[in-house]
Amino acid sequence: MSGEADKNNSFDEQNRNYQTISQNYQEQAFSL
Image (cartoon, rainbow, N blue to C red; front, top):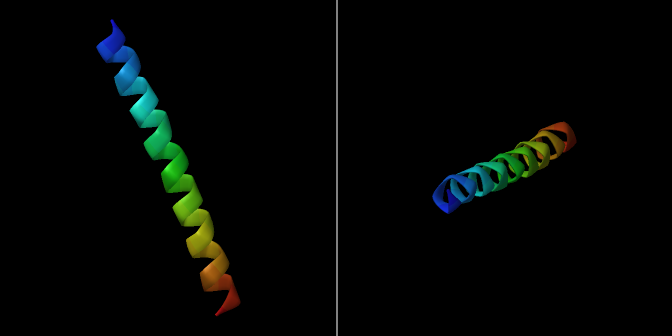
């Protein structure tokens, strides 16, 4: 049960990290 919750948490965290990275990438590409 807790293992499943951990999996969901890490998935949310990865998703958030991915969104932040792609946002940074878009800002850099736009400023080029």
